[in-house]
Length: 265
Image (tube, rainbow, N blue to C red):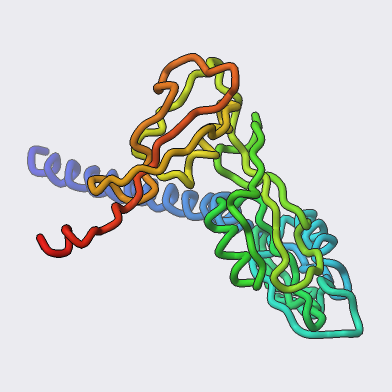
């Protein structure tokens, strides 16, 4: 009997090992099935594909509205001359109509353009700098001094929330686009902001956030600061806004080199 016990124990251990392997194998198969049927469809959005709508002969605005309905996004618009159609009508698209894609797919459009006319780009949501680059690429212009500013509780500070002309409008070459930029939410406490060290081009935005304007501008020769840098302001930062609502500033300019300066160098 004593010789039988070790054999029986070995047999029991072997059976336990086989049973353990089978349990692990079944669990692994179940795990793969769960991944295949539940997790992977979520990752790849299987069964959620949409057919790309036919955008041809619609305006860009109409095409964008239809794409949003199908959770698609237009990211690139090219132009092609076609004097038979008004500017801004979709001539071609990629992916083509009827193609099956996943939600979130980016689309590219080719729209009509007449000679001497261009399509006004969509600048909403961009920064003024990005908008300026887009406008210049379309042979249009944006003048910083004509930018409008407006407080908004929904749009982040520094983001374009309005434009004139509207996106996709057909306009003449070298036309001006007037932007409206968000100032963010109106501050709870209105105090004069610190302008020292900022470039004068940044001042309108900084002041408009606090419903203030630029007052007197004095240009002062200063070698220690880059040209256009604010070196003094009145009232000082943190003060109560003046009744006039204006902040006077002193701006650095490059000193004029005299003959004496040339001789000493």
